[in-house]
Length: 118
Image 1 (cartoon, rainbow, N blue to C red):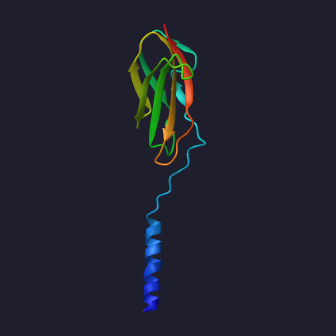
Image 2: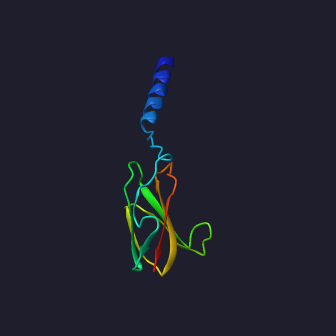
Image 3: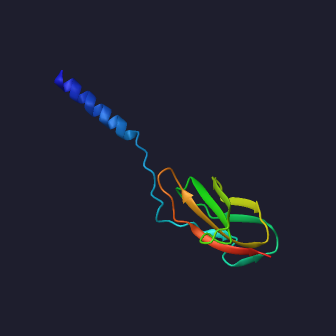
């Protein structure tokens, strides 16, 4: 009887371990921004933001501030997306935007860029 109980306990232990899902640590990876790049001056108010996808990221957090995050007058956008593109209609002025990758356990540092609309 003792052997049966021990066998059952060992079986339960192994079965529960197989249910563990390992999540990749992405906290030391960075997002590569495609557009708008740092320092660019745009002449239209419809802005398309894009970045490269990051392996093991399940979603992306994008934030846009004016004029920048250190002296933010307004946080224009703070959104979580599953894709690598985002469009926003903005007013004339100076902006800073940042994006980071996220999964269920970890997130990358923000990649930050600034641009202006004239």
